[in-house]
Length: 231
Image 1 (cartoon, rainbow, N blue to C red):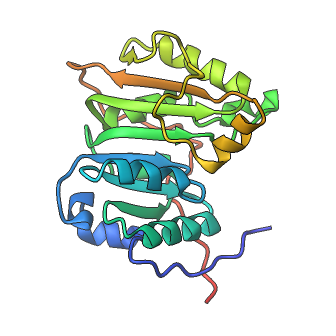
Image 2: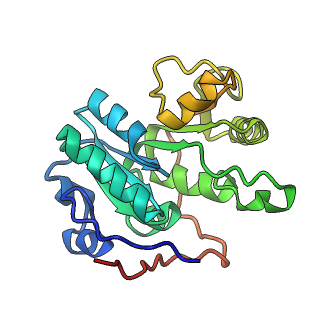
């Protein structure tokens, strides 16, 4: 069953057509501050925290779920933040179509769907294809942060990133449970309060790399088509 769509009227919500007309996120924000991307922002708890800490940076929050986008917009509006914009879009489509080479300072991927069944694990977001897209979009020295509450995903993500020579490991181990000053969302807090660790992988793109725009798998649906919102 398709999800019921509700109209999002928040001024921080950016439909794809608005981005097309503006031509760039610098035009959307009205400045050329460093840009960060929060993939799968949920209800916006994480992106609001990190945007409050870094007013000198601009943040794009993306999710595919209409209700999550609406709640994220409400959180942003309530704080009065001017350095966050929300899009309902598939992250890989946004990276491929609109975020150019070396456009991002930071990418956050927090607690994505772990696809726990072995036969479904090929659907996980963090794979070599996604890393190629991330490296194309990250500036030299830009950082990819990945978190998960699912042990198998955390371990495999750490192994994948640690094996990629284009990244510099910021923790010295493939992953860490020490979150330090990393913002903790309400979703993460739920597991931490139960004594279950969060797996954090932070990797920096090495300088001196030349990364061509990658080609996505032929089976990936590039175009994200919204359902018609219900007033």
